Every structure is written in C-alpha cells, then in structure tokens.
Length: 338
Ligand SMILES: [Zn+2]
Image (cartoon, rainbow, N blue to C red; front, top):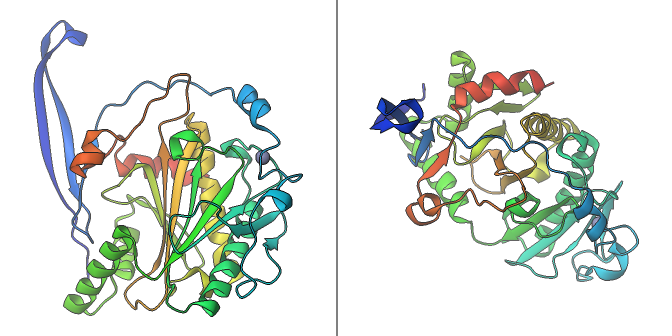
C-alpha cells in the first residue's frame, strides 16, 4: 500500500522593510501526518544562529551534582525489593534507579555516564547502548512485577530548553498501565490503518519513503531512519524498528543501531550550533499494529537570554511548527549516518 502525502500552501503578502518596502510573498506549507492526520506548519524563515554557547561556567557551578559518581549511589532512591533486590540496575557506566519525583506509575532515571557534561558531539554509541541496556532491564523487571505496565517511554531531555534542570546526561524511563496521548494516537491510527488496508502502516511507510528517497536517511539492520513528512518538532529525525514494538525484544544489533542513529543526529545538531534536544522512544507491548519508534528533535539552543520555542501556536493551538523542509534536512543529515 502506497502512503499518500497531503499538503497545502499558505501565503502572506506584505511590503517588506527589508526590501525597500517592495511587495514580497512569504510561503508557509501545511502538511498532514500520513498516519495521524495531525497538521504541521513548515515555516520558511528562522532566527539567525547564535554560535556555540560556552558552557564552562555552568559546568563549573553545577559539577558534583546528585548524578555525579561520588553522589549517585548515596543520594538516589532504590527499587522496591520485589522489583530489583539489588536496588539499582547498572550496565557499564549507566546506572538506573527510581525517580524521586516521578510523573507516573513507574518512573526511573538512567544516568548515562560518569561525565557531568557532554557537548552533543561527545555522546558515543556506547553511552546509549549501556543506557538502553539498563532501560530494558528496568522494563523487564517492572513488567515481571506488574504485567499491566506495558506502555513505556524512554526519553532524554537535554539541557534547560529540553526541560532538564540537571546538566548531567540522563534518560527518563516511564511505564504506565495506560498510554500517553501520543501513544494512543499512534495505536488507534495504526489499528485503523491495518483494518482498512490489511498491512502495517510502518512497513508501508518505509517502503514508500525508500522508493521516493527524498526523506529516507539510512537503514541499519532492522532500524530504518527517516525524516518525517509532517514533523512535530524542529529538525525531527525518526527511527522505526521493523518487527519490534517493545525495547525488551530487541537484540544487541538493533540496540546498537538505535544508539548510532541518535549519535549521528546529535553530531549534525552540534554542527548546526544546536545544543539542546529531546528524544522519545515509544515502546509498547501487546499492540500488533505498533512498531518501536524513536523521535529526536532539537530545541532552541541555550543562549544568554532564554527563548522558548513553544509559543501559543504549539501550546494553545496544538499546531506544530518546524523551520526546515524535511527534504532539505534529509539531504543535510544523510552524510552523518553510518
Ligand atoms: Zn553531575
């Protein structure tokens, strides 16, 4: 089944002071997500880059945080004995423990490394392989304790614009018996698509994108990387894992492919003078039409004066914007992959 990509154009006409008050037309493109039908706006202008931010003072003032090696085992919570009698779950440098300030049923933090701060080009695939190994163990052990906790988000909020007050790189691993809004949209629209077409949306999408070539980045084993047609954030890159819906069923090869794709994306962000990002992995057991998906987006970089990139457009109109055509992003980021 070939996926249909729907879009329409808006145009704003004005007399521009930047061109001696001549008439100019500024286009905006509205795209519909092929699965959820959610609208995104692609705007064709952006604020000028602010250069690389100097983190040295911020790092100096915040080092020795609760996630630093000298504190992490003393100041962070332990799991219930019924879930993980060892208290914390570790793999290499990564350490997982319950979130002292959870936002759901099973909230964990995974500290990714001993370093208090990393620039985006300093993250390595090994860091994420170890972090995801801990996340998998957290999910497995929690689901052995509570089978109903089958909706999991594995995410990273990096730096203040990404929503993290702690510099030290870490993941959030959150499991619930109920889905988030985003998970429900993915599940419901994926099921409807399957009922209508008798094929999986995600398989059809990657085949279509592969054929078109303009948003398809790379494949590594069963992990397909692409730029979404209708992004829900800035510089969004997606990875879909064929045949898997949950992080717990992945083998080492798929975990490693996910890790390398994240690091490739972060290196591109670094070269574009970006420094803050979010990603989320939607890991859901027991939903036949779902496939494991990761979405990575950049945030407006940390700079001297804080600028939030979620305006009333996003927060109060649920109309998501991005400022680079997905096809251009794909061309630019492809050389960073594998
Ligand atoms: Zn630290």
